Image 1: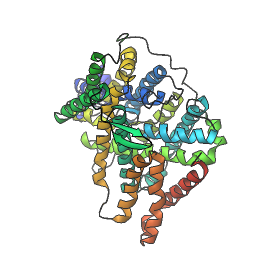
Image 2 (image 1 turned 90 degrees about the vertical axis):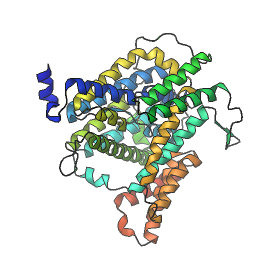
Image 3 (image 1 turned 180 degrees about the vertical axis):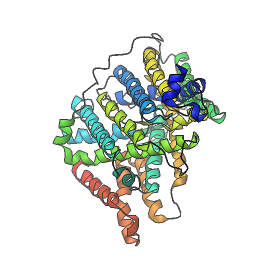
Image 4 (image 1 turned 135 degrees about the vertical axis):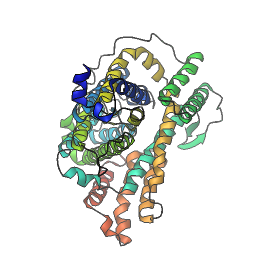
Length: 455
């Protein structure tokens, strides 16, 4: 068995071993397993208080299935130690912006099957576009098409948006008459659960404990249990039936409203591609897998695996499945090959059988509130990468990451920066900084706002 696995994954050539790869896989899974709690709570509407019509139990099952499929495919096809799951940030964009856009385009409302099924159609089409471009020269062209400052602006803006939802669920802020205010009753149970999670996760991260976010969620869950807010019906059980979500992506309705939804398709596509590139580059650098030219080898296979995972995820009723930067935890533990990814995938499959426990933990929004804030902190680290010394880059980027939480709209904040970017560059005499995507994105988003805004 050892010889067969080494022949396939070549871990000996990377000075690794089966034991090291397994430990690395467990480390990566611990670092990214929080998504199993957050994704079902988010997309079912339990986290936001607005039901989407997507069953919590089925979402939990398909989160594990889609993550396992994408991660194992990455290991077998690209031989990289990278875990995949529904992407944090992208999932919020899809829920709040794409699903809202689909509701406006179709005339439906949140909770109607046509809305979430059309949303999955948008994700599916974006994944197919990503898959096709993975094998063409367009890939490199597109990767350089968006200004780095704007990319980081999007990441930090979504990070603030996620943190804002965490503070709300944790009973720290409240929205009264459309205004965000600090709640005075910060001694209530929700706030106690929130503070427990924040303190636990922060301390665990300080001491570089792997899986700190997951352990923090468990600590919050324990407090919620002791306060009588959650009850456990069991720890282990059969996974919930995934079929209410499987093969429900409605591509036909997307094409019926293609003019309104095309901007959202392309934003999903670009977010997936940039997210994948950033995560893979970070993990490859940590694992010292870059070649002599500091390039990622087999990049087309990495993109193909990621894109195929997005397509499969959409067919399972999931938002964009993408590579996780948390995979660096496995790289730091010595993971160098796809065997690490296969171990992560197996862990996701096993997690399905703990559905009663996970459903109890994730079903009460304050339990995951601290995790959302800490994820927001992680995403905010990108703000230092924005070119603050160049106002033609800094102002559009600032409009994006400030506009997202202030407007309570991810696509609204993105639109502010991307629409104004070419006008600022042209007026400043920096037209050479612009490319086809600058004009295309501005045109698409102006069209989107004209067609959908206010509906």
